[in-house]
Image 1 (cartoon, one colour):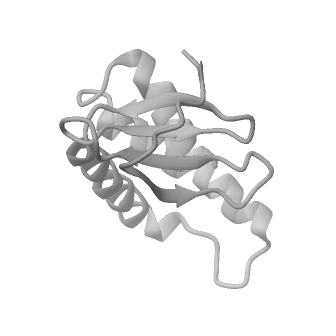
Image 2 (cartoon, rainbow, N blue to C red; image 1 turned 45 degrees about the horizontal axis):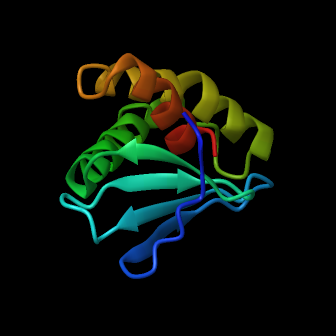
Length: 119
């Protein structure tokens, strides 16, 4: 569910930013208990990503494990970026989704997988 940007005054910390056309930002709200994490798009709409920074970092660890466990399937160094994109989309993303499926709800799984692996 997308909402209009909530302009936090204090406690708004950008912890990530995409470099593609989506201009997606990852925000931590340090004013709220457990420091929830949000994703914000270029239009200022925000989506709750994780209810705590703890879960956010657990998911990042799972993403790193997903890349590491599939290292032997990576394209060779110097390969065209399209091959790396395919590796991420077809191998790492589904592997990551499978690893976190018991940690997040089915509705969260789609957005988390998309933001963590497709952005």
